[in-house]
Image: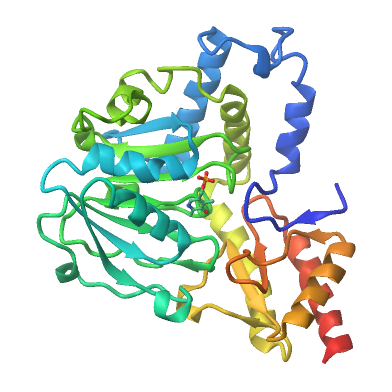
Length: 360
Ligand SMILES: *Cc1c(COP(=O)(O)O)cnc(C)c1O
């Protein structure tokens, strides 16, 4: 066990068990005398890795057969363009809910390509809650609706999927991918960058309902055309092979601890420890509406910028690192993704208790 607990919002902690297997296999993957880093992406061995990763993901998330799983690059941010370029192909309209910076960036990018409407926003209260919507809020002829399911910077999450009245719903799940069971069939597409909960940076996983594919605009870059990526089993060009390999190991690890229901239980236990403390603290307080709290990202403040800075300095010295809040909001943020052990959160809460005693 390492002594430092890393609360980074991303790239973030990977399970130590996974890193140990990767270290063991670094020079010689399964008797090949090659590292996965050195292997052809067209080799039998790598084909086994990517197929196994997809099969495990399908099993763990119970992905219906009429959905494609794509391994892509360019980060979640590249999908902000790819989504309109693939799906804004009927009325040219798309409806977005603005729950934070990532949703806003996706919304702004989509504006380059068509008639994009913000149907709701929580900007009025610094994105500290999830705005309520009704199906009447969405335009009946919109090509798709778009949400960011877990808002990494502000620490909110959708507990209920909005009713769009049948308009295909697309969700960015970058920061809660595989953190708990998710009913994929409610979405036309979910996608996320791997660097929060799944693997090192460099990989995006997209899960897309088949009937959505095939309508990309003529000007869509080949690398952003989901149909082309799908027809080529994510091997149109060289994929991020090593990252996909780590993804496979992480999926093995999730399966070994009992799958997504077990993951959810672990994550709830960790989050409860921290939220219960925040709710009873006289110094620290959470910044998010209780009913919309994320299990993954927990922002909190003391109410004083000076004390926040003192806390971040001292907690870092204690081996609890990357707790500084996002540069746009300040304060603190604990990202407690799948790989964060319970002991890490326990140590953080113990530290906060002592800090409160000394500084109140
Ligand atoms: C981190 C993050 C992004 C940006 O991901 P990149 O891979 O850096 O483009 C987008 N959306 C959400 C919800 C995120 O947490």
